[in-house]
Length: 329
Image 1 (cartoon, rainbow, N blue to C red):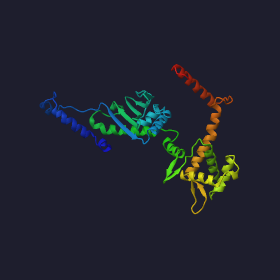
Image 2 (tube, helix red, strand yellow; image 1 turned 90 degrees about the vertical axis):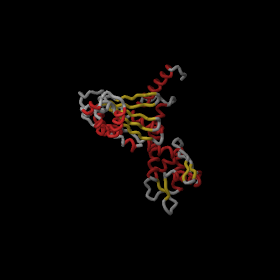
Image 3 (cartoon, rainbow, N blue to C red; image 1 turned 180 degrees about the vertical axis):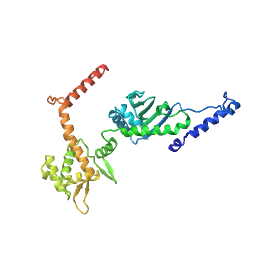
Image 4 (cartoon, rainbow, N blue to C red; image 1 turned 45 degrees about the vertical axis):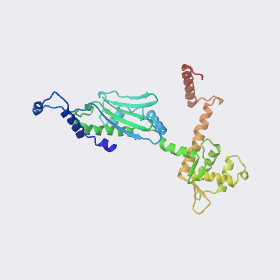
């Protein structure tokens, strides 16, 4: 399909039009053509699109909504100048703005330059569609004759690529989703069933906190060393936490890829992936979720913090919206 699209050249379009002009009735006679009179083909509108099919529709929607939130300044003069690679001044005839249009539940991002436009949206829930529509070739100091199609094609596809390059989001939601979900779900590894390491499980947080402690040990750790530390974190006596119980947790960590056994030993070391997961899980819970919930839960003591104030405003706005919609809160 891409090869067919790339082969749609000005020459092929010209040949198709000329074939039908020779068959269809028209006011020009053979004598007119002999005298040099004939139709010329012009470009009224040209559209160049880039469609990137996504493996996970939900992930794609999350990515696009994040891209919209963090790139609302795309329509500003400086950003448009980067996207279209044109020198733009205040005298340039255009409305420099970013428009986010919602039709139903599908948002669309529009960036205007003179009479041309880039539109980006989540197509049919499965692809990120970026398309540049040129409504006047003179926006780019190019004539309207069909022979200018290759130059317009280069401008349109480069604008699509530059938009994707200019767009940034603060996190890699695709890789993040791929890392987060497998750890939080039961897995089957080479025929071995392994339980999940759920983020909401206090025992999992204690286990990951212990892993962080053993990260820098050059010779790794053994069952009894991790068991002694984990028992204290769980508030248990070391004798009440058996080696068999610890073996169960070690198996979970190993099959999820958080630890690996040192060759020819009964000792383990934390993998790079395990270190990152353990550090992120424990720090997020300790520094974001616990203190955040302490500020917003109804029974918490009043705290004058930016988070509490913003959450109160959100709560009030939601109550007002529910009341206006005549729904019971």
